[in-house]
Each structure stands twice: as C-alpha cells, then as structure tokens.
Length: 132
Image 1 (cartoon, rainbow, N blue to C red):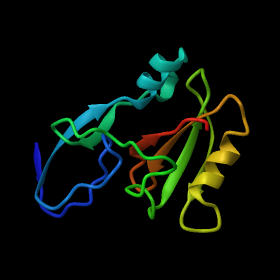
Image 2: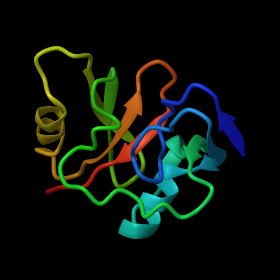
Image 3: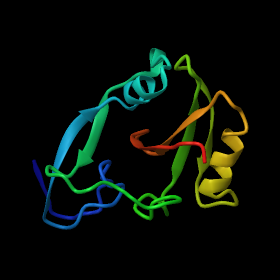
C-alpha cells in the first residue's frame, strides 16, 4: 500500500484518480492476458506485465458509460491489437483535433481490432475498450 500524498494517480479499478492521502495499492497487471481469456485470443508477444494503481478494497469499479473523466484531459495513445496479440496500429491523442471517441471509432473500423488506452509518457496501461 502507498499513501498518496499528492493524489492524481490513475486508478485501474474504477478509472478515476486517487485523492491526496488516499491509501492505494501498486500491483502488477497483464491486460492482454485478461482480454485473451475473455475472448479466446492469444496474448502474443506484447503480453507485458506492468504496474497499475488500484484501491486496496473493493470500490465498485467504474459503472459509467462513454469515456471516464478520470482519463480525459491527458495525452493518450490508443493501441490496436489483433486476436493473435500483434499490434495493428494506434493513434496519438494529444489534445488536437481527434477526440477519444473518434480515435476509437477509427481503430474499430477494422473488425480485427481490440484497443487499449495508454499513457504517452510511460506507455502504461490505463484502460481496455470494447466495441459499442
């Protein structure tokens, strides 16, 4: 557990941001393995294990629709994966013309794609997405 003195860390469990002095946990997570298990795909060579922040106790998760506010307003990368676990491409979202919804719609035009949202600076996994 980490006592978060500044707050603002992206929380994978509820897709929000940590609060100042909130107890959070830093754990290892393999997002492609979960996706592969749920869809019957192969995690492939990009099946990394990386750190994510979560609440140490059940928080109820994110239950909204659309794209969570806790991830908006950041420089993001939308990364597209195939069912074989290969990278098919991606889109950089840096506050320019393309919105998150537009970027995902563009990637999902390819029926083979599953997409992740990642931080630009470190490439950290922020969220998985699903076709609407």
